[in-house]
Image (cartoon, rainbow, N blue to C red):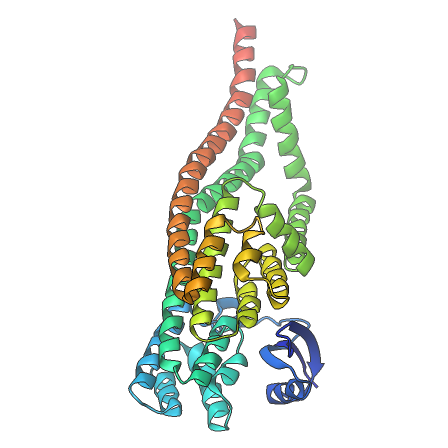
Length: 407
């Protein structure tokens, strides 16, 4: 019997995680409902993911652009009065994404069987996030599904824009780092040994070489003599670190570390604040309860430090504290966020106010990324230049010494 990992909320809107053995996802939903839990995310738990071409090329992954297009088209069709099943069928038939087409086929079957659209989408957490599912559920309950889908599409476009800007800004530094590492190992494995042999032949076995040359030759000899140990060891260490960072404890430590690194800290904070403001605003505008908004936003903000802070805030809000006061007491959130929340609570327009906060921090993210890129590029050039200079010095110094001896 397959195992399913689930995330649900109890009657107090607290998240509940667990694993259960059921025949299929429908039975998991039924079992959780009997326990008084509301399913949010259900996925099949697999011990090992086997190798396949789908996994290799990520053909099962729905691209954000396809999801945005599908959401906008579904919103337009629902707004025009087209029945939901017919709308979904039309979208599935004309979708350019094989993965999305397959998922939509399963969603159509569930909706035809009487399941709500939000619950049907929740069965596919890799394609539809918690925010997406909860907003659709709220839209169904309030009868404003078309409006909610428009909000969702806009929110996804904003998130995708931020991701693209970050990837674009980091592309050039990443290429420089890769070239630097490749050049280092290439020089150590192929160039330095030949140069060392030439210098030894010219100066003889008893020639006294400078310390920098001896150092470079020692590294080269180590790599050429024990490459079959060093490279697997480096690969194993990298794999182990990545595996550890995927664990809850490793992710918390990594997120805490990134919030201490100058430059990167600013970008991560502003991205987290922009996601918090936009996601919370969208959920509030959809009519989702404040506590559930906080729990869902916490899981979608992308940083465990902020996730824990928002979950703690939900506890304090449940105990009667205003959200603006709770946020204002937390140093992770700048004063402007608490002030804007306070204005929203007083005017009853929290969602509108937070949209302005999200726009502000998204613009700040652009500025911060440009600033970081302008710093990283010269730093990498200096590192590459220093490496080349070190190798040149290790070669030219003994040659100059030999020239003096010949004179």
